View (cartoon, rainbow over the protein chains, first blue to last red):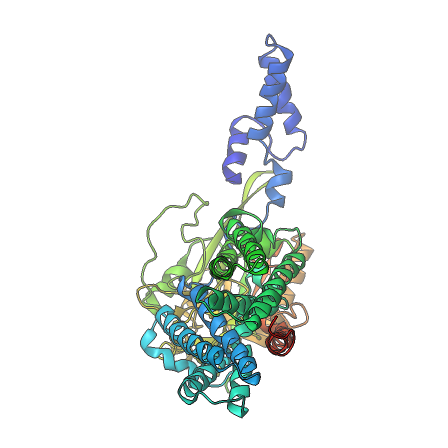
Length: 332
Length: 255
């Protein structure tokens, strides 16, 4: 702590407010150890430099207040990033299901409607479980609040879940108005989560607020494609969708990195636990794309599913790291 | 709608007695938040939280005479454009007839979204209770014609409560007075002009140092002020996902 260092500087008889106190300290030390070899004197002086380092210039310039965070991280458990995965898969599956129906691939459409409905049910359960008062989950839908991305998202999830359940029962032969509506709500479901985290005061999320929905959408497509590959859906349609969405996901992730830049705001995606998770997710996705290209769907599905989950966990963890770093809020 | 009221917290008058913290805890019957010693000067509370609605900072700075204390009683800013209120999905967070921002405990379902939505890190969730809590500007006392407990307890009037217009006039006069004495006093969040990102604060501050020294962001922004572009991007991304799906279905044949 800087105040301790200043106190220590005063103990040492130094005036902490004089800019030349470094030099004085070095001089005194050099005098005391005059008999020692020059190299040792220099090393000793350097050590004392470090010891007395935060003299006035540093103390008054230091960022913030005891390096304590300015903003608070989201209090969410792993349920929320898990929902980002489940909801993303459900949304993208609803979109792809419409496309499958369009070309009359009813087997794939049925598989996708099952995945979509399951993802919505699991996702909604995860969200309710994460609430501080789960028994009050329905308070989300007592109002329509366009200013709140979470409220809008709840309505999107609600509509998508209803349509998903309806289509699961109906299983129509071809794409009709309800199927198109499900495609639209599915598209919303897979992208709104980027709006949700982007429009907070968490620096790493907020800076990327425009590219985040694109990353979430592309990643949702890649995750749905990977789940299809993993569960044995074999069709050229799936393969083409997998190639396109995995490529788009890698590009969107690069766009997020570019938007965040090399400064302190983007640090959580480069450093620490969240940085390692993010890099790991990138490599998994690249490997998954290669496996899809090499027609190894089972392996591609495994790698891509892991990438999808890890990407969301990394973004969640990056938000925590970003909130806890006062430099990210105070410096830019 | 009654008069818009708020706080002026003048850091040059704060003596760090923490009477505001204690009065707030007592009146609002807030639970303790542990008894750990932090080593950060006399600040063992460190931040505003679910059960700390007034927090006295002790920023230590060296000057020509040794170490100077900068003390400030921090509080919810009751922003004119409040991130927490705009983010709240249940409508639990409302603006009251006094112009303050209030979390209705009987509506909040503990989603936690208001917490990262606050650019000042004010709101927090009480873990044993599950709901979000923050300063209410003593809503119950205001309705009873009393001033908030912290302002009542403040022995130096570092915390002043009153109609916002009167507080602004008073703050401007005080800044002029302090500057004549050579103090580099500034106002933080006193108006929409000086802090467009929040539309001005209903609890604003008179500072004698940079905002960062008191852990206040220099240019706070309500997080939803760019939400339109975000939604546009989401719409485009969703349409692109649909185009990719349809493209994958229609083009390329069966290989």
